[in-house]
Figure 1 (cartoon, rainbow, N blue to C red):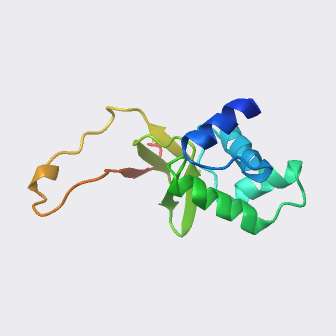
Figure 2 (tube, rainbow, N blue to C red):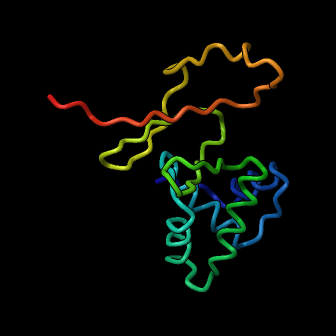
Length: 138
């Protein structure tokens, strides 16, 4: 797990116009530790409460929503009915392993999306592909 120094986290928050309060820094630290994963708000709440048991659910949820609004993380519905927070805000695609529930970032260039220019009357702002798959049987 990545252990990001508080000074670096403070700078990241300020770069996204977020006031670095102790609660926000704690949530940011837990997200940094979840790099490569796609935790739910409840999972982040659990990580935060291990270090700071008195933090409220509302504080964590509001902080995650603020981080998503400001582009620090991506909030996505990758599992039906469940929002996950992706610590990698750069555009990328995902694979959902239907057997394990694991969500994997697909490397750039893995998939190509074509034909977007045919969507007349629309300005495409972002493309996010979710591949649902199962491991093939030998």
